[in-house]
Structure formats: structure tokens, C-alpha cells
Amino acid sequence: MVVLVDTNVIVDYYCEREEFYKASKAVMTWCSEDSVNGYVAFHSLPNIWFILRKSPEKIRRDILLNICKVLTVAGADQEEVVKAIENSDFKDFEDCLQDRCAVSVAADYIVTRNEKDFAVAETKAITPEEFCELMEKSK
Image (tube, rainbow, N blue to C red):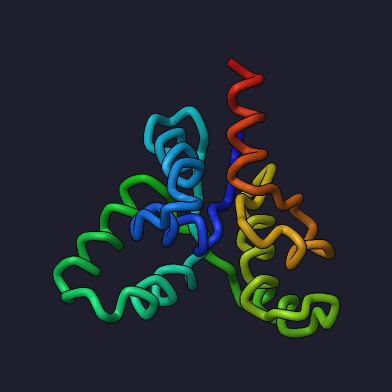
């Protein structure tokens, strides 16, 4: 299985956001154990850097390095970025870039807490909890 892990799931895991931590940890664990080919969109990394701006630089760098050990960075070339810019179906350009990155790696799913934001995506969006259910059923 191939998944693109959305920024919010990664931040939930690293910040141990109580309500979302258990499922986000499971997603990251499956990706780290090679049970799942996990990807992160290239632009998620500076977003995470910004979100964690109150943390010391060394901690932020360590977190980004750890992310890159668990998830492979998915990029978008010129053509994909232009497609995202021209796609007015998405309300949020960043979400459209997530989808273009997911398409570029042939992801089965985008794992996100904001699946409604991906209603028009080419790649199906599922919540971390739904992803956990899928993984448990496939055991």
C-alpha cells in the first residue's frame, strides 16, 4: 500500500496531540516498519518547520530528519504545480498540491484529518482512524 501522509497527521504525531496521537502514531509506525510505503509532500516540510517555530532549531531539524527517515519526500514537477494552480475545484491550493504529490507517487490514499478538503482529489482521502481499520483488516 502507498499513502501520502498529510501535514496534520505528522504534526499530531510529533506534537503528541492527545485526541489524535494514537491513530497518527499508528500511521507513522506502519510507515516506519515498511508495512506501508509512506510519503510526505515536499511542501509539508517547510509547513511543519513553521508550525514548530516555537521549538528550538535543533529539535525542528531532528524532527524533519526523522520524518525523512520514515517517509519518502514526494515532489511535484512544473507540470503538476501548474495543474494545481489551474485547478479551481480545490478551495485550498496547499491541499491541491498534496493531491498532485499523491498522484505523482501513485498513492492509494491521502491520510488526513481533513478528508472533506479532498472531496475533489484524484487520490482518495481517508482519516488516520480509517487507515488503521484498513491495516487491521489486512493482517
